Amino acid sequence: MSKTRSKVMTIANSLVTEEDLTDIKILKGTESITKPGIKESAGILVSKDKLTKIEKRVSLPDVIEAPVEKGQKIGEIEFFVDNEKVGSTDIVAAKDIKKINPLQMFARIADKMMYG
Image 1: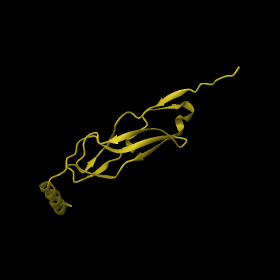
Image 2: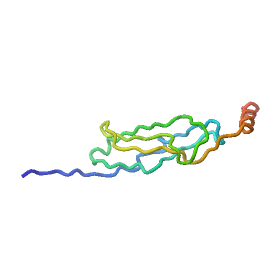
Image 3: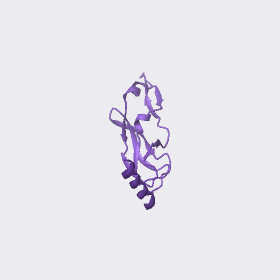
Image 4: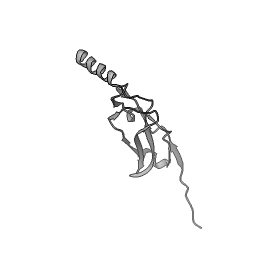
């Protein structure tokens, strides 16, 4: 008679921290910096013995160009256990950022020239 051993599985929630979602500079936008968000909850199912072995790799640009739409994918976080990809979630724009018009661009340049 053979014995089977069942694995105890758990859901690893809250895998994405504030440190993962760094500010992104916006070029030619009505705002110059934005804080991204995540598209959906980043929970993955892993065996309890692998819970502490979860690694994450964040792909996020330092700069993006306006216009940016709320929910637009701007990066990704991938989760690995023992170098095997076990999940991912999209990093998205948290709000709309419009492209500035030429008059706003001129005003911004003049402001920087006068006030630094």
